[in-house]
Image (cartoon, rainbow, N blue to C red; front, side, top):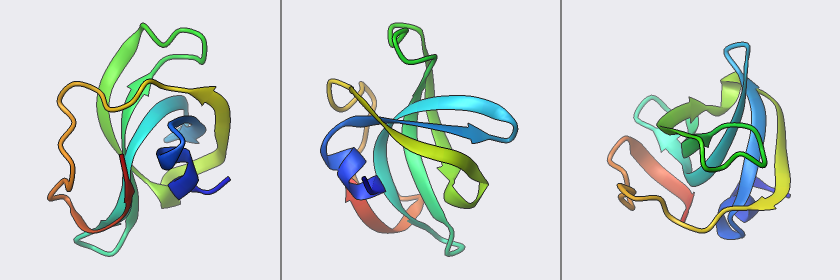
Length: 95
């Protein structure tokens, strides 16, 4: 499943980032001002512990390892989400 489909279908993403395991609710996938592919997501703890959130984070695709799309879904946009985030020069997919 692609990043675009994960966002469209509200699937969690699981990956390693800067040496740490991450589980996020992806909200936007696009390209930043420097031409880097990035994801804006709401970071949560392990799958199954979605009530323990960590907040909004910006992740660069080039630094994400072991990326997988979980079959676990999330409920939709989190509080504080703003469509068309200005940090993206081009948006490929968003909730």
